[in-house]
Amino acid sequence: MLESPEERGKATRFAKQLGIHPRTAQRWWAQYRESGEIPYKQSRFNNGPECSFTSSHQDFVQNIIENDPQIFTEDIIDRLSEKFEGFSISKSQLNHHLRNTMLISVKRPTFEAEVRNSAENLQTRYELFMQWKDSNLDFTQNCVFIDESGFNINLRNTWARSKKGTPAIVEIPKTKAVSHTIIGAINASSILYVALKKPPPKKEREKKTTASTPKKRKVNKGKKRPVDDFIIEEPPIEYIDLPEDVGGGKEIAQPPKGTTTAHFIKFMNELLDIMDLDEGLKGSYIVMDNCTIHKSAPMIRKIESRGYGVMFLPPYSPELNPIEQFWALVKGRLKRKRLLTDENLSSRIAEACNSIPAENLLSFTCHSKRMITNCYTKTPF
Image (tube, rainbow, N blue to C red):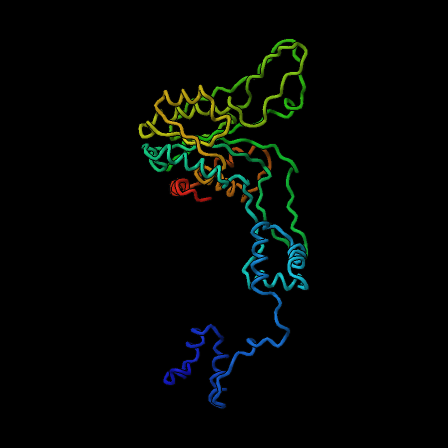
């Protein structure tokens, strides 16, 4: 403003360029005209004691936080006092420096397994890339992605509103709800098949039976569906055969609560029937994580005999499977509604799945496709 006298009357524009209030610029200009001296912002002058928090302290604190992001303020102060003799700082001063000087804030953490980006796992991802780099596999063109996810009626957002000074209390039907497992298959353009596996009824879970003769629990026989008919059954797999008693009078093992190889094989049989009806899916690759239940040798042979390929992803690599993002979005939509009973859970899941646009599926797949480059460069993700 002082260097352009012909523009002196336009203090507002110069104030915006300098990042100061227009009234401040006008006052400074008036002071300059009266005294001929350049005014300075008084707050720049520190009349108090010199700050004892130096760049050495910043580097030390930065290293502490990188090693332990959840460290408490008191522990940081203790570490500083041990490292720098005679150093003293209050909690409020340290928090001020963290927020304003070092730009470090407190936020909700994302927890990851320690081995997710270990050197061994990065090497495993690299070997996966080298194994498939010369094939015709393309995530956006000829791949079907499979994974399981757990749901229950207590799905809620991690935030809530309440009056200032009062706790945000959210009432839920049960403190511990029964989990339901969903197995799904998607590709870059559509949801191919989703099935719900419910746990056995409570009376069956709690009853301890002794066997004089072997007993079996029935398996529901699912019906074949056309490709465009997306259904969550009630449920497609509810019970599996129990092992026969070999000792006489011994308790029969209770059926596993999670997804078993038997559940997965039944799901895959129905999925393959659906894929066979669509000519565009012929020769596709079925991509899934390296979970034990996915690695049934007879199932792999059956998939390959039907003309499809199988790709197992490296451990701790959710970014490579687009259905992980799909399930996250489904759960996010479920959290917006109140699930009152187990009975309406499956219908709500179906609504949430069907509400996801096809362009989102393509975005998920493109993201995972980009992450494959990180496998080659051994870049953590």
